[in-house]
Amino acid sequence: MSELLTTLKSEFSKLCDEDSIEQPLLKRCLDDTHEFKMNLKKLKAHLNKQVQEASTGEHSEKSSKKRQLIIDKLHKSHKQWEHNVRKQGKHALLQHNKFHKVVLNKMYDFELDQVYVNQLPADAKQYVERAIGVHISRYSMCTVPVKDGTEMVNYLSEVYDIDPVVSSKFVEMAQIVRELKNGDPKACMQWAADGSLLEFELYLLEAMNSLEKGDKLKTYRYLLTKIPDFMAKTRKHKLRHKVAPLLAQLVVSSENKFDIKEQLEKCVNLFTKDYCAQNHLSFNSPLFLIVLSGIISFQFFIKYRTIRAVSHVDWSTEDELPFNVKLPDFLTKFHPIFICPVLKEETTKENPPFALPCHHIISKYSLDKLSKNGTCNFKCPYCPIMASRSRTKRVNFVIL
Image (tube, rainbow, N blue to C red; front, side):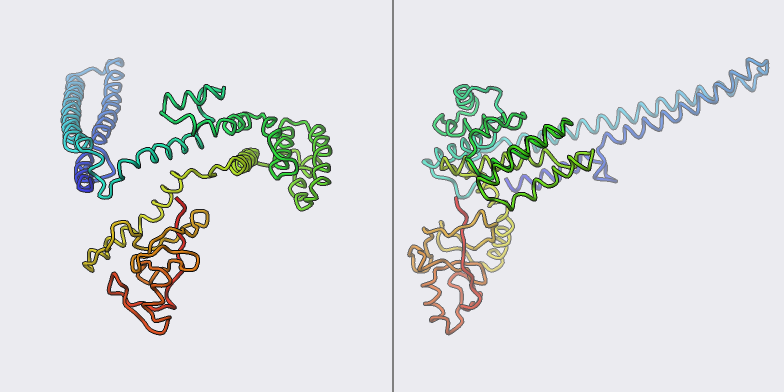
């Protein structure tokens, strides 16, 4: 598959102009057509001049020769343009057919399972399909073309083959999010817990919608009814500063300087987070976490592969994690089942994993043993890099 990338780059360059790789072959046809159009305008001006001279009685043999010369130039320009367009069109079609034959056909001429060196075991397919189902249900259920809960579950089952047990967990969330985005926060307001931050943000959203319609009096009465009761009930007085800009616009400004879309997204995110927490669901789908972690880690894998090839070293065990990658906090957490490749023991809170300067990872007990409790330097068990206890770092792994 990687060899195909080189072929793809080589063949794609042939679809472009030799002088400029950013210009496609058919750009020449456009340039020739533009030049032919300019020549036509010039010849038309000359012909009009000859016609005017003929109408004034200045017709002569010299004028006839000029008109004939203009007509000959027109025929010659047309033939040249037609020849160039046919030539460039034929060349472009030839290169496109070659590109399709050499590259596009080969992209489908392989088994996907043969591309990957570390293939997933056969029994892992059900978990991958479940992760895909959770991802679609989590992020896309509110966009399906049906509204009833049962119909939504059946639609995902028929179109995406998602297990109804998985999709049914997100039905209520999708319905409320859809209504919220359509401008109806009632269902979300009924679901929100009393005194929650979601309830407060929904009050602000409703006030913004009312103010945007130009009804300042209604907005003022709404805020006067809802916000004081909320403050008295929750004693969250720090939230008052969020109401101040709305009140200022009611009194001073005639222009709406707030962002309703931003407020709507805030409410959607708060509701989704609360809903997932209440129903013991992951706020971010496992598939999203894995893909994001892979994108961030890819550069380190490439670097590791290059170093391994130059140093002629390899990793000893197939299932070991070869190095630590710094990931965002919401992706990291101590992973209790990492197996130390030196002692072949499971890491624990008392025996956590540590990254060496070369990014190879071993357990704390292995580190103490190799460094003789931090009293000496030592060589990494898997590469020639020297290390010391003071240059190691505690490791956090991604939650999968």
